[in-house]
Length: 81
Image (cartoon, rainbow, N blue to C red):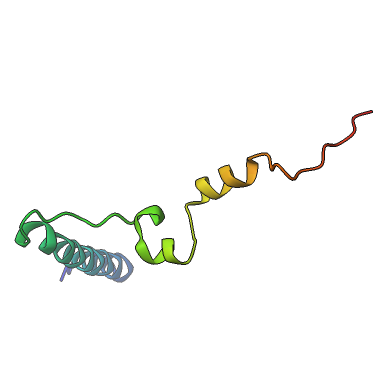
């Protein structure tokens, strides 16, 4: 590889190049769907778009928080002093 660089720097450069190669291969696999499928897009990764999550009653944390903050009709009013 690089003969003029010290051993540690050479090892770091080698690791960086291998990491870059792995990331490039991963990106190529992601792009296969977009490039080679008609009207290809990335699927939504958001929880509210998942049918399996809907079946289990799992919602987005924002939706769950909104539901919990709604005032219940069964809530007992607190007495303020």
